[in-house]
Image 1 (cartoon, rainbow, N blue to C red):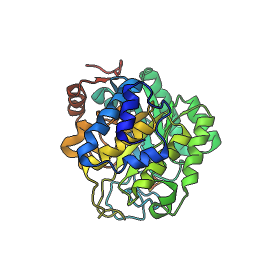
Image 2 (image 1 turned 90 degrees about the horizontal axis):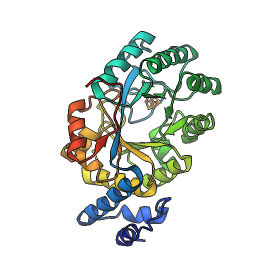
Image 3 (image 1 turned 45 degrees about the vertical axis):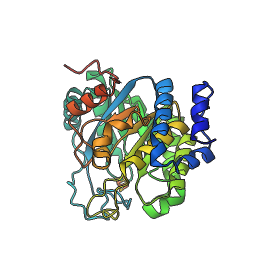
Image 4 (image 1 turned 60 degrees about the vertical axis):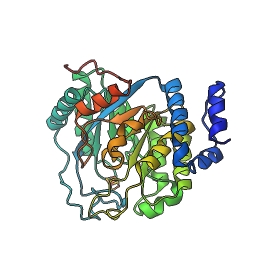
Length: 335
Ligand code: SF4
């Protein structure tokens, strides 16, 4: 089916509930700029049908920065790179709780995610994080708590669940067929197995990737279907922000309309999923940022990213409201 046949299906109320096929998605990657707004209109209407008019926010803290043993070529926190990122070991429990309190109140988010650099999490660090999660949950019972800690042991997964973890983030980063060009110190399957282990433990999965790592358009669609097979609740989409000193520091950013095209295609592949635009939004999309919503996204990271600054919470709130959308409110945040 081509774009206009898909639009007809949506208008007739028979758009495929489970999303479009691989072949149809791949065909859409060739959509010319003159037809892109038809694609966005379709993605927007699918977003509205399955996700309503609300935008979900998630804010994060980088609780341990840099010095990672892995060689992910895009990452400023890899010890294999010379990216001059600030390095620090895990901040203590009080600091994590304080950062959570400040961030939740400043951003009015209803999700808060603790992120650490590294291949995985040590037992000692996991205990600190679990204690912090319990305290944050007690202080902000309505806030969903997420974490992104790399690979975690089965015992660690249980500890996180008991501490109140709602969702676990682990991205596939890129299609399996491209993964070896992006990272050589672990495998794509290590990542998908982690997501499966959290899902099996009854914890929601958050799994996405990055555009702009030198992948082909076919590999972007491969990644979408690899993610779809994992059935995560949330799909974070990142756009490479080439950081000087990283192996991909000289990569040219993809054109904003090209990135928005893939947001739209991902919405059509996974009509009912939370699609969250994350790192690289500001640097790549510039003044087209608000177009992520008509292109099909229904969630963003608010506040700062791991090693780069984001927009101010006020600007993001205004952007969402100016698009006629509502923010999924945080009942705990003071006005
Ligand atoms: S993406 Fe994660 S595992 Fe890869 S280098 Fe960065 S911190 Fe390490």
